[in-house]
Image (cartoon, rainbow, N blue to C red; front, side):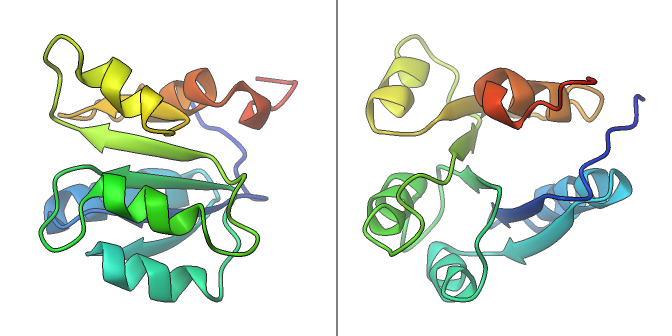
Length: 134
């Protein structure tokens, strides 16, 4: 697996599935990113009152506050209106990607995640994050 220098990144990951959350954290931390993890949309909102991330990765299907509701709330918070938010989802039916992007997400990555392609997929979804040397 290729190594990326993400030492200048802060990533907030929101996923109610502990195994997914753990794997995402490990992959990004192995590449130098500072990672903040939240198991719910509510927890993410609290975290984001202190953190100004480079990118936010969020599951779509979560109880209480789904990814769409979280995105809506994030876009109203000071300093977060332009932070890229990428949806992580098992919703891969025809039209799901278009719905997610039309809702205001900056990108879409399907689950199950492939660890070797996670970071390239983030770069693909938000090209401005890709370092010139990559």
